[in-house]
Image 1: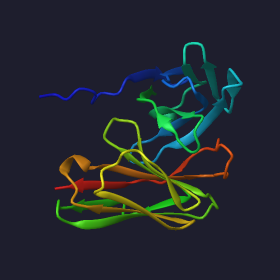
Image 2: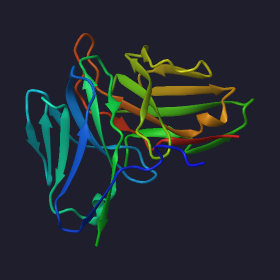
Image 3: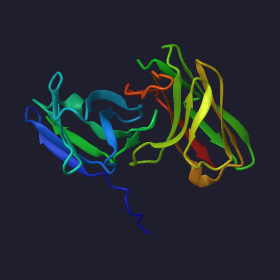
Image 4: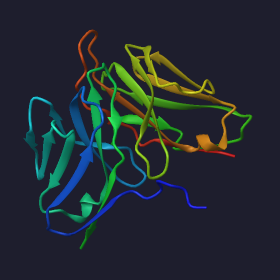
Length: 112
Length: 117
């Protein structure tokens, strides 16, 4: 039979549109967060990070928003390109030396 | 190109075999990690080494045995694995500070894809 959990949440966007990928984290003690991008057959790549004393941080074409009240992170990608197609994971770092835990991931499909 | 190198890229082994996965980094990072990733799932933390000492073991079965021979190398020794251990094994490294909380990013290798028959 079919196994539960084999299907990643998928976001499909048109090239040039903005994308918003969401993540709920679990540990209220987490105070550092990273977004990673993982292309097929590759290891995760760092995109952007944010500490809990901030609620917004911007990079090149990407913005991360942090809402500690509801334990929610989002990644906004401006002018999405086909090269942005990948699986995106958020990772949280509880106040514990060298421990990072990953969220369940979202697959981004960019249609040309 | 990733600065964390993992070998082999692919490994097929039987349940009675003994094999090893290897990881190397030359970024001067003193924290190194093993993660396990099943298809369409996030990476799961297995082990963390800090200054060549095992600092975190996430209740991993003893058929997985990590080793950190020096600050640049990390091995994962495999023995008597089960088919459900088939996965992508990711190595990562980061800066570490003794007594100081690490907030640096993880640098990942491309992974070793393991198939247990």
